[in-house]
Length: 97
Image 1 (tube, rainbow, N blue to C red):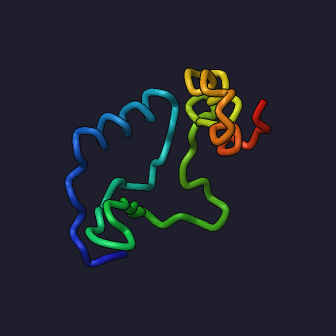
Image 2 (image 1 turned 90 degrees about the vertical axis):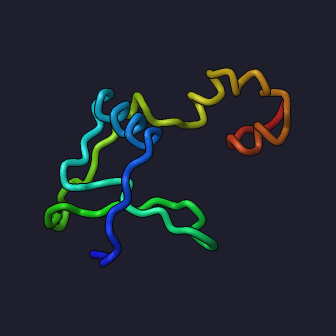
């Protein structure tokens, strides 16, 4: 573990973590976000900290598939409106029309 003190979660962090939990996510032995590293190469990246030992093979977190983003969900959303734009298709792993 780091000797750096944990930083306060922002309102946005708290809203996002609450949304995850409200939608079935679990992360019982993790505290996050913990750190925000200033400067390059980590500019603004967050870190997590374990609050208890995690055994080999133990699940660290669980995120329901309903809240995960993937190519199919993106294409079925408003992003899919840009389906004729080649770079959008390429970014989503699909051939442009």
